[in-house]
Length: 90
Picture: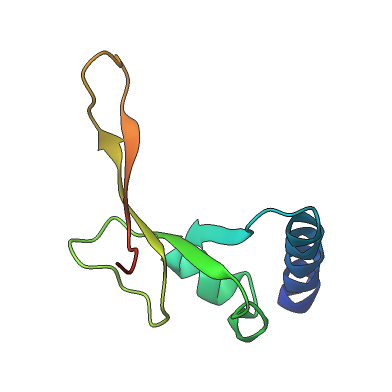
């Protein structure tokens, strides 16, 4: 059993390892778990990829990617797929 602080520190340590290897790290979670499992105040150095299947995401922080369904369809794929929108500045 771990605390939100311990889970957050483990996530930050992992993302720092990814960043130090030259890659961009991002935190992925459902909007509910972001606020109950992690201490989100320590994650603002990283982009958020939030899964929220509402018509409008219920997430009070800036996020870079929104996973809006896990029941999408794509020609040529016989099972449901996750569908996401990435918000990129031009």
